[in-house]
Image (cartoon, rainbow, N blue to C red):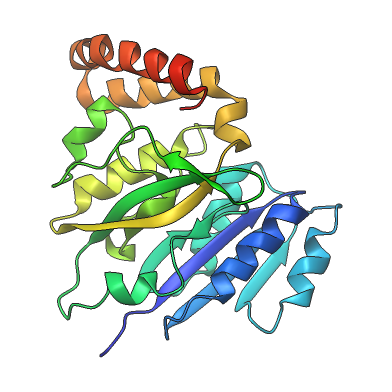
Length: 248
């Protein structure tokens, strides 16, 4: 089978422990056409040494200061040459070693592949599936109800993407995925757990600013009235789940 080239991009800053785990999980992938890119923000905690230890497996890497997470991710996009892009940042892991073969086992190619996300703790133990479940047939209008698919379980073709909007420091991934969904004509549900996501990180540490940014993006895309109406449903569900499960 003619497998498309997948650019897997890992962004890291001073997160050596999680970077090591992520690189090892990517190394286990059996897919035959992967380009692996690591973008480090100028770490001083041993992250660069871990990158160098795995240099024979990494296609390209850089280590230099950046303007934050999404600036680093834009650098990864600039370096990528694959047909599809998959961000598996430090702390994230592919859902299984053979997951990409299962995604791309069909000859006709979709614009976007998506799936579910399993949350894991610091030791890699499964906590449970993400609060929001992907709809059976996803389109951009579903994002009026929140980020229905996590960034880690979203694999778009380069034909439908743009750069991350650096106006947003915590929710540019929501804007990026929403844009790709608008541009796509073939959006395919894999019905698989595509990624493992380690709880914590930038989003959880900045939940209120992130929600404010997401509200702004929703207004820009769906209008104020529609966004306010959606939040009458979103907000109670969000806080109920947060109180009950101590996670989101």
